[in-house]
Figure 1 (spheres, helix red, strand yellow):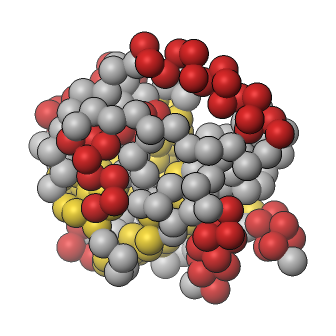
Figure 2 (tube, helix red, strand yellow):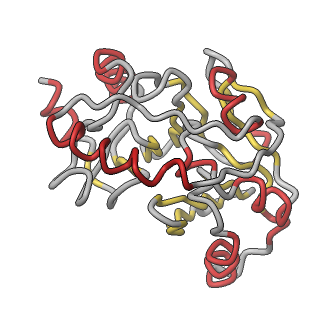
Length: 225
């Protein structure tokens, strides 16, 4: 069984298509990105109906913004943690607190334009809890793991290969960070670190953040040591 990992940029967020025996999408991107989504999967020769599941790493607007449109295009189920289910189903846009100096500055910039953003509401089909969920039923050799910290409903997808799709549990690159590391926004930074230790203990090798390029998990290991 071959494994394919493909990045589709949907607004400010990187979303990932994972192909094995089945195909899933990680995150729903910013609003009004359906056209870019279609261009992305067409370039990969993926049919919309091939995508069976949309795993949303957490409920912030730049990760759920096009979820309704993508669900409509693909017919895929949406998986989101119960703590943030209402954020998508009720079009909510909570902003995470900053934990760095640059985070505080960036948060003030975000506060100006976020009220202008509309997130179309969509129903959540797979309500995630605090236990792991195997992706075997969707033809993917991996699992969804609760990794709270950036938000209390954050989850990650960890493949058997050690590829870890972590949403905003890490960030890499301008304008959020200069290099790879922990997020500049977090509801609980200590839980971020505990979640990272969990992923490392479970074999995370390569990190795929929602903002920035993939990087080696060794960068996080050094940060925690």
